Length: 429
Image (cartoon, rainbow, N blue to C red; front, side, top):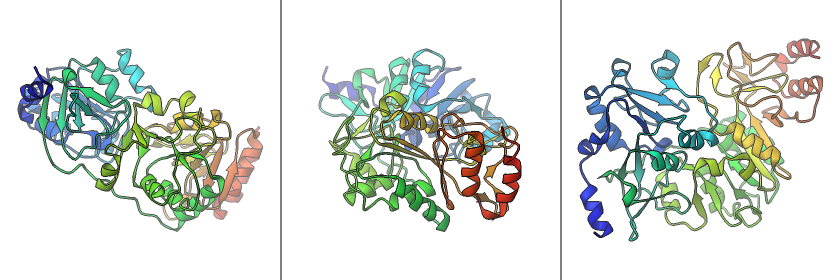
């Protein structure tokens, strides 16, 4: 039977395709815009016919009807990382959370520590050899596909056919449905004067020829805007977004000086505009790989001059970063922060940069504190911290004593809080 004939035999409406789900199943869904809207809508519509089903994902970008406290005994969301669609449910306790380092999710699936009974994913149209591209999020989804009893794809012509280890053959697919809606777009964040000031300090730490990991948010995007005059930058990151596309278009990113995978941008998921998704389609300069490749500190650290830029919510005078909770209340997750901090520390000439505004709540609270708020989830440890940047400057902590670290951090704190922090610093060993 030809691949086209096999394709037709597996094609069906989304309402029928979700029939592969059984009571008690654990469904794996890709990061962000890799989530398949037709399938998750159909699952939501029939959720009361199921019992004990869980849907696991690192970042939901849409709040489907199954994300509902009234029906959690039927279908319950499990977060690897909270976002706007799931944060309230996580804080209220009716959405589950599995702590993780992003890079380790595939191995946890492979070892059976995290189940993978069914996979739902967006996919590009099939090529002549019978392959689809899971290009919007290869992440942990490729590992789940290898383990799952059933793989269900939502095939959409607006999903790019990317290169890299993100291909799935029709023989691996249990069922598929088709859609043609535009891929969900995520706009660029707003940049204010604080973010712009931080971006300028970070840009001064980045040399021509550096390889970058840049996350999503106002500060990372402000950094990007300061890099347009750099030369021969490379990209080895978890997320590719419109900020990176801007650097490609202006000529700042060429990947020519990368010593690991030279000439190639590497990422594990995409989050941006339709312009970005079109850029990804059959682009030989870009490869999308599973997260245990992109985020593995040993592999990413093979890039010389790797600069990792990540944000935190709060940091104490020892350098511990609470990047994923507000006290004990969950806010996001570890994601790839600890992965890339360690990768940059391993890299020859690497720099791990943590960024944050110096204050919160209209300058009434300092984000640099004597000790983290009780219950705060520590994301980057005092042993891994390197550079910290606020709108007041740059602190270099790696290799410094507790007292030296405190002095460095106090110097980049809002002036209104420096005297108070200095009193606390005097009690440090």
